[in-house]
Length: 215
Image (cartoon, rainbow, N blue to C red):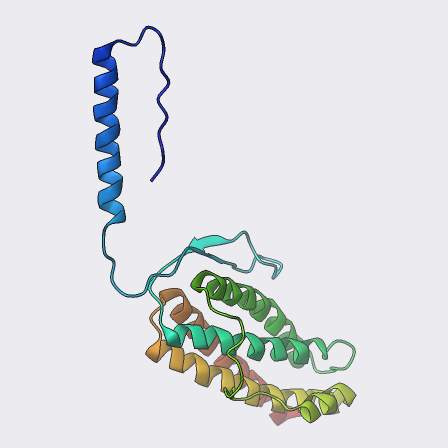
């Protein structure tokens, strides 16, 4: 509730002071009624949602809040490192990829998933949750260290084929996690992001399979 300070002047009479006090009490009463409303569920503090700009960078953050549950927290905690690995894979395409379709998908991954990572980090901060889910949680579609080394060592058509095969598996894992969030989550923005992951990465899986077919 905002605090209002009254300025007093020597010309203010007793009647004016009483009227001002009455108005102040009425305003406080209204604010108290609003703050006491029960919206149900677990309500997250205000958080910042970063959305990508035209160049792929994060636009100014917009406030976001709403009920959330453990599924929402786990989704963000697991999708952040999943996205981070996808970004590592996409960056390897620079100077290694030959196929125009592979290059296009690598660019799309960077433009979409970097802002999404920032958004999910903001949610976790607002929810008072750590960024890491800790040990004992497996993420579908994650590449092994050897997979990443093999991808980094490949060039040209060999890179294109390896990238497509690995990214298909990686995207399928992300889609699985996103579908679980859509089913079990409570935070509307997290569920919307999950729906976008399903839409975008399913479309990219289709394109990657076409690339493999022509290589």
